[in-house]
Amino acid sequence: MTINVELMEIFPVETRGEYQFRKVWVKTLDKEYPQTLEFELSKSLIKKINEIAHVGNNYKIDINLKGRKSDRDGNVRVFNIIQAWQFTKLDS
Image (tube, rainbow, N blue to C red; front, side, top):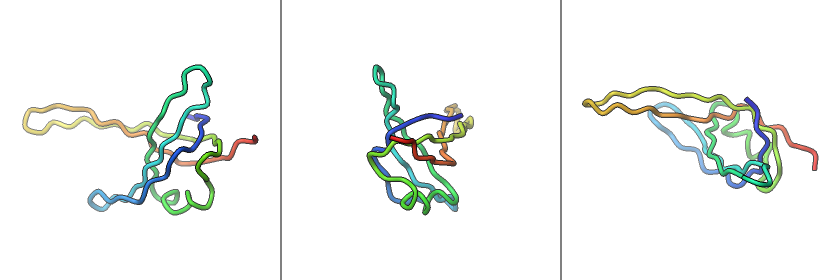
């Protein structure tokens, strides 16, 4: 899936167990109903994001939607993650 956005904020690297990730906030380019979304970056984009993306610029982001069901002590929940795997700068 691909989405066009303005990059709002890049957060520091976090670790969950052995998994490292980084979060970014973006705003969709829909003029009438812009949405603020949080993406998770992993693997090569964790470090590369500072080189290829800058807050305030517009990007086409390729994403994967991930989710899993969790059943702990009878409490059933579903966790969703929007994971970005590529940033391409849009022409202004």
